[in-house]
Length: 354
Image (cartoon, rainbow, N blue to C red; front, side, top):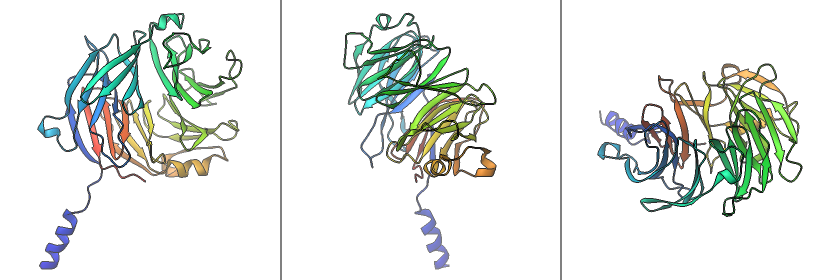
């Protein structure tokens, strides 16, 4: 009897992984990003950007872990913006950039429980048609901004002159933009083409162009270099797949992972443990790939195309498919936040990271 009691007590003290908390925020959220904290700490604030609201906004929330049943998350600061928020990225622990569907690019500071606009660029001086932005990326102080007509404008965000340092001409349906290095940009479009541009060279022609899928035109939704090996490009498609290439030899190094059942909406590597990849999809599910570095080590030298059932990457479904899409996912420390299409934020704490 005493042994049974001791066994039950031991079970009760075990750490519970992937604990889920949900909170309705009464906003349609397109992007949710943690305010960065030092490694080893738990994030307690996040910024969200809304879409399809009468008055769209950027909102700062406090969300201490385990307090959702006590009135958290709590909105502590709100800034109205013009148009849908199309992207939101932190460039340091107190500073973030946001783009909108009305052609605004905005720089903000987080000061304790306040978000304060620092700068708004007059993007009409940069591009021919800046009525909408699909997204952007930032590296080493340079912003690469994608417009709806496919123009890519690069400029230092510390410069208020509105003079672009590089401009890539329009390509139809650019959906994804990502820096590979400070002088190289990857673009993906909805026609299924990926192109690599060297900003040191003639920007009117890409250095490399290749299809996402050689057999069919699959639109590209997300792009990111693998953080530990920048020559490895990771992308996602409108068909729910995840693909990788070694950019030193794109012809013979493609790997395609059959993954989500619908298009991938976001793709995020863990900042401190990049072997952990998190993806979300229009089907409403969120996946944790916790051996992605090992998959890359096995795949960069040969071409493979396979399903999860045969290759068996180590994938955990954190949130199953449901009626409403997941618009974005972000991870900081051992905490994940996902923004769902039904005014819902889902928090997953105590992630089991590799």
